[in-house]
Length: 622
Image (cartoon, rainbow, N blue to C red; front, side):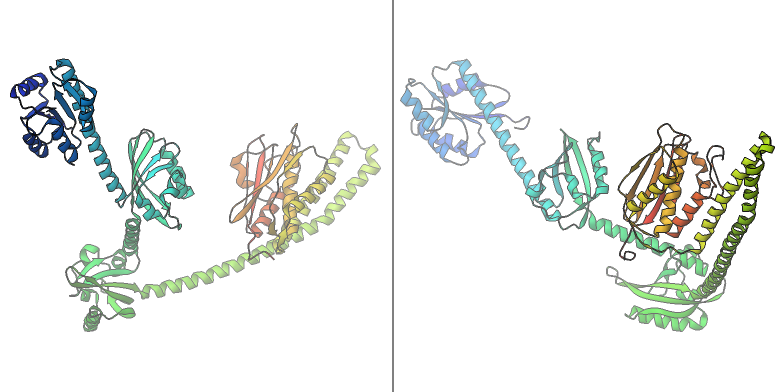
């Protein structure tokens, strides 16, 4: 019951003295008393007033208390009013049973006990008040239920920790296509794109009681709906009102896109009304004609039309407004600075149903500039082709030079190595220790020079050789490489090799890549107490990334860009032997396969080398 309203008590007794006594006994500021001295008056009052309690004398002339109670309980309006019978009769069982049968909730026996009377009345009023409040709450809940179920918005209750749906209205089924049973106890994440799930999970620990966001959800048919969520977080639950804003977002997206396209277009796009007044002007029009938007608004179309074409332009404008079309029509325009230019234009009519006014949207391109641009592009393409041919010729000359130099160096190198060997073999006893040491240095450097020449020849041959592509069993290839290296190099490295996916490549060239990378890993981890090498891969939709990791000497990451250049070494020959060409060969082979190659490392903490190959597809799998 609302604050300020009083409980209404109807006292019915044929003796006014009893009524006054009862009023005096029960008097309170929060109570109002109505009285009647006979049954008929009591019924009239009860049927026309909102009564909270009836205190009814049993023995009255005319209609007695039992008869009045019977009428009250049979009427829809008064059947729920609690009745207290007041009686001077003896408290026999049969008498009380009759009272209860007629609807009494209790009896007051005369002479009245004041304390018992007050207590019974107070309790009955309290119960009646609670009953009314309950009825009001039920009514309010029923109204809320009807509002919720008839709402066009989705209304739901979600557990804030598990994100499972606990309650939901009919709009969810209407919009998302799932039944109530399908949705209940299902995680809300089920309906989201994987990329959006993290966003929603982040809100589960949201400290605020109210927050909102926009998110896309998938319907049962897998179409996308955008919903604006307004959330109240209390008692570990989310009380959510979610409104479908898909069409609003789409309209806004298209409008913004079109506005951006029109505003930033290099074409001249402007709108003129049916009288030829320019009412819209974009950046493209400003660039072509030289007039700013402020200058152009209010100008007429013939301000940018050569005088001898004005009549033709007006006639064409009238044709367009009358429903005609203008698509790719060549004409001439005049700029702010008096220059005549050639343009091609298209135009369409825009109608305003509210004002009945018509306007024309016009798109124009300056084909004079286009012709110049085409000529420039043609010249640039010719220059580029010439540069490409020169570069190819230079590469061929460089490769030929490398091959010739490397080949021609072999003869004198053999002579040097041969004579050093003869001196060592035949005259070592005539040389002192320093002389023998110098011969060893000559032979060692001749051997290194031989390796360098071999590597240079391999590098130059790569430039002339096109890859012979086929499916390659990468696990089998790596296994054969490891066996070759084990046969030629006595190493202590422990190898960990994961299952590697096959690739579409030149097997001979790819074998050289693995030989160079594995040899490097073995060499640079050789000084570790427990050298280890790991070979693994990852795959995406577009490429396979293979990598080899060691726990060896590593390198400083700031020198990464030098690793794959010819003759670039990050360690001295005294530390690790080598020519500095192996990684350049790896780089060139992978580039020929349209892949990428890079490395990561840290000094004395090992290095990882990566290379990628395209994922085999229908276009390259035989």
